[in-house]
Length: 98
Length: 141
Image (cartoon, rainbow over all chains, first blue to last red; front, side, top):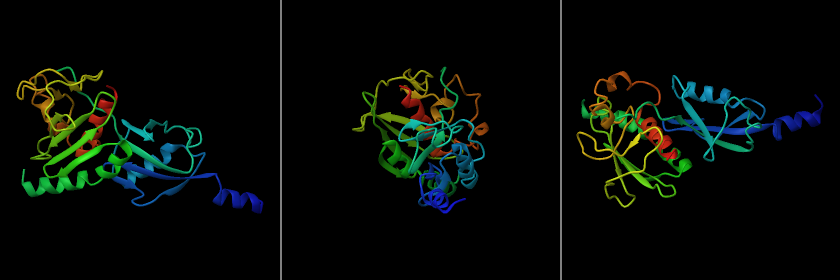
């Protein structure tokens, strides 16, 4: 890798700064962690769930600035860049019909 | 349920609400055992949700609905799933949250066999999770 590309990868727009926020706590607890902009969002969500001891997030929804994002897509594909706070929480469960 | 245990669980499960509230545009009126009192702000659907969490987590929270000014709502707008239920609850006589995790759901005659004990330890059914689920239903109104 040439030095220009190395510099670009380490400090440039190939990364995003990510935090996952839930009502049970945030990951990381303070600030942001770095993630590759082309990495699927679900990878960081899974890491956050593990660290926050959330056993199952299969029915959870992820939003950024009130807009639902697709965890199966990358940050770039979701139109995300820079510092990203992901609001992560459970969808409404069963009920109704009373 | 021993009150000290209930208080400890309440504290643990509500400490993250403040940061999520900022992101979601909620207004926090108060979070102090046994009450979580927050407002959801939206066009023609502002609502204040008050979760009464005494005996948590042996019992799910009772969820009461008010105007932002604190007046009890005699009627509410409903969502497609019927979680915001405008009919008179058989115990309270008021509109109620008809969703697993709401005390009014589990005490409703239609759901008394759907025991809270079968749900309470599942992810998303902690206090912040229940409030988040109610908010997600409210977004559908």
